[in-house]
Length: 196
Image (tube, rainbow, N blue to C red):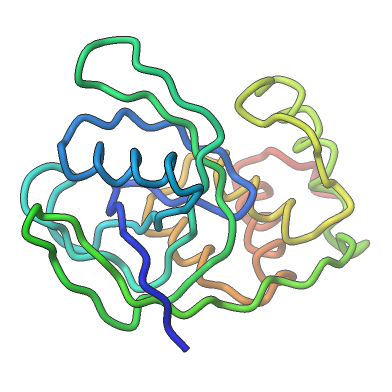
């Protein structure tokens, strides 16, 4: 069963439990966010596969993340500053562009990744993430779930200086351990972990 969800194609990837600050100024997205505030609903964030953030509706990658409003502020006229938190992952099975240019997707919710501890083989990546989380402050607020392999992998995917396309591939991965192994390999290659 698919569900209708307004989509916000961006040049960034949102992960479940991740925070994303956005500046909203186009009328179609102002209306979408206002509707979410009024109805307590959500929208989908997808990485742009083709097109631009501004102007004509961009073509999204098929896997994205539901975005729920955490807070909002209007510090200047016509610009809404919002912070969203990633919720469920979804796959876009169809979409259409509304008259105002808003992209509406028919989405199927992907199963939540299982909660499991970080395997002993990847435990060496935890101290660095603990340090990064302490330094990130409000950008990575508690609760920190260092005992949840999916959460650990997602936070690394957000924090490491990798391309948006690499982040997208990591979002699409259903294998929690594979994601951790990729992160571990990256950290080793860049001299961020001891070689054991």
